[in-house]
Amino acid sequence: MQPRLRALYRISARADGPARAREIVTSELSARVGRSTLDEVKLLVSELVTNSILHGQAGDDGTIVLDLDVNSEIRCAVLDHGSGFAAHAERAAEGGGWGLRLVELLAHRWGVTRTAEGTCVWFETARS
Image (cartoon, rainbow, N blue to C red; front, top):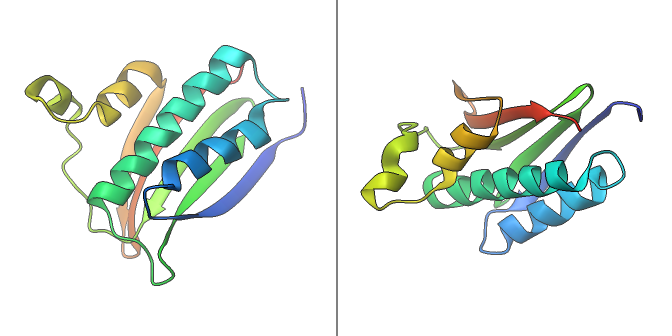
């Protein structure tokens, strides 16, 4: 197993943000995990970044933060300066987006943390 990876990335809170997040995940994880895990993490990170751009608030520099922590498992978090939202994974069934529903279905654990600085949505999954 490769050594632990811990990295923070600033991502533009614009329409190209999810694609940039997928590029980062591919670059950092492709040699560390299997193809199906890589595809799953890219999908979930893309959904969290999209939610952050649509429902959150970028920092003064126009960015949100992607936090990757890869050790015995993978933990990804997306942080923005917004005040948060109601974390309802059921919204997809009501005609909304699938983001949090996918996170709930695919991740081993996930959650939302609110701080004085903003909102952090995170997930954890197995490293395989």
